[in-house]
Image (cartoon, rainbow, N blue to C red; front, side, top):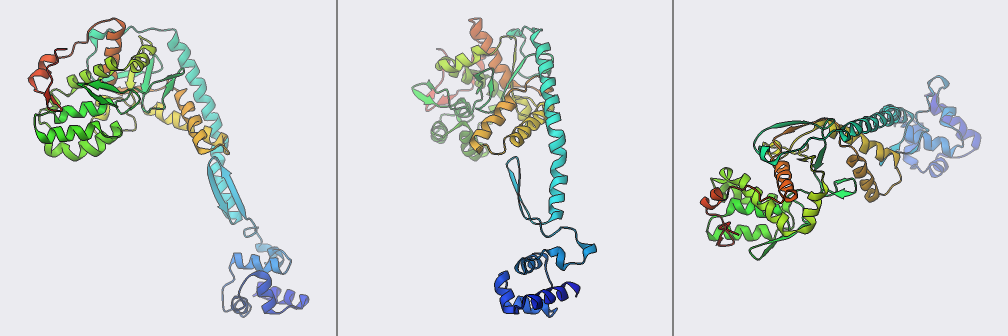
Length: 379
């Protein structure tokens, strides 16, 4: 009641009517009338509009003891790329509570991580671990300490290391190659063709869908997922690894740029498919996980985002990827890493000018057809 009485008092002193107050405040006459007759609750935003119309502060209308600046805070706050509309002092306090730890701790964490990377990289540079291709076991689970040996991991097409694009994944469409007169834009489509490689019209139809898919990802998600349960070869798991070796070898033979990327990776470095963010049982068979590295890369990404609040999203994405790519010598990789091993094995074959040991006898026994033609693997 005291607030209402103060409003009435100011109306009287100014010599204005309720209609004039409504017009000045942007509120309806009915709202003003009901508030002044105590028939409608006076909300904070409404009080602020009335006070503004009367050319006074909300503090002049509320009881002095209860004044907390809660209703006069208005505006937008940006932290990183997150913009928050603040409408009260309490909301401002909550915003500070949320971001203060990040403001205080995130730069410290990032600095510590960068220092750790620098120390580990220096230590790894002083060691070498020759990899013998004959000793590579494509089915054995491994544990690799990235702080002790050189590891080159790949996950996305944007991955880069020492100025080298390491887009080595099967999904990548940067390295087209030709098989039996047909051009594949990615090795994933060729690999999945092996799953549908019987001499049947249906399998030929599916293979056509695979080779025309926009990317390896589409070949996997849109084609394989749709047809595998009903039409996939039941013996697929008995030859898919040897088939993958053959597919990647064809890509290497058929694309000079892809060979150049593999040649650019140090001979003593482990090649790892980073499957940390992938789900499913095959994630740690074809690749490996490094939780610690992923978490610390995320911290560097967040720090980069907060350090560049006005950067356009496209440019910010590049900066964040650059920050991630600078972190490589942290954490432990765990998994079979069959894809990484295949790439390493074939790289060593190229360097040593040796023919890869692929089980062609097994592949021939499986009667693999590609677009209606039986593969003999004699070339």
